[in-house]
Length: 461
Image (cartoon, rainbow, N blue to C red; front, side, top):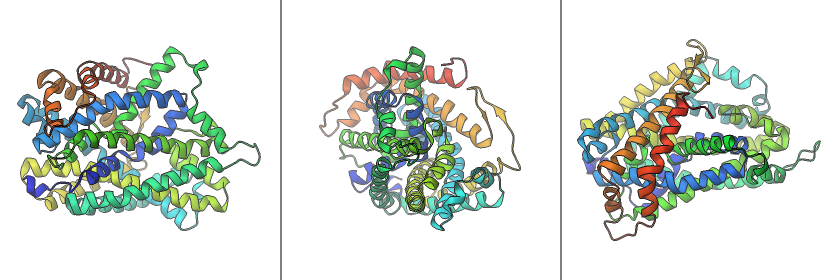
């Protein structure tokens, strides 16, 4: 089965694929919004500390689990302890829920790319453009299917010719585009107010400790913690699946360090790319949550730039499209690999089954803004439609539960040494052994319990 599933040819391919998984839509619109909301530099400081502790512990655990068992998430946890077969099922349900709505949003990205590429970027800045698109029936469905088919074609190529090849091509281009847009964002100026991109950079990077309270500090810590799930793709089976394709001779510690650096750098650049530009033309009020930032606020910013804005809009949505594809590929692969391992199906059959499922469910998500529209109050205080409900269940409930159960399994039952032995089996050093032990056994479980209590509305910050 291992040969049929393939493996990464080199550690670079693995690192780029893992980083590509992490650099997705959540990173691009969520990180800048949270940084702007949560006191800029203080949020970034909390994020980096958590990435080096909590994020590192979960990331190294999932990758090592995948390599040790040579299994995808559905079957990997049960190989460590039969009593944790349920955890593999739950870890696989997460990408099953995420894939359809993620591809629906991917369809929105294609729509905006086409809009800017055809010179109609000014229309995208209209007050009702975004709402008009998602509440229409045909277009969202068509673009969602196009996005899904692109994802499935890459998955059909397998580990080497599909995932690894795509990552080696798209990730360097994506990185260059993000750096280019970030630099450009610092050069812009509002002719009427005199506000510059540098002013926005200060808002983004410099913490305002004077306005910091105990309550806002706790809010920032848990926002940063929630963001980490998006930024490093843990608790959704992806890193277990990718880890199962890693060669036994690969230095896991070195690879994880590289993934951490890449992910953190891109997350910081995402903010650098967006916060200064939005701040120049719209102030802090422009930093709306979620899709509103990318599909409503930024088009208005591009419109303010005139002709240059159309070009920037094309480049920006190409970059976002690449980021969305690298992530959707990893989400679909976690499901496809699980079907291959559990039922012995071939890649083609598994991919087609997942594609059909995602198209049907994705259609329901798209129609959730028109034919199937409803408003449902959620335990965390928000109100949502079908997409929001799926996002809440997967990200606010299942992912923290998967992460918590993973900490219990490797912190207390199988013990941290299981992971440490896998990471160091070729004589490598486990540089953060003490941090790993303390985090996986004590720190991460406590943080995750608070995160779950917050998700259920029991604890309100």
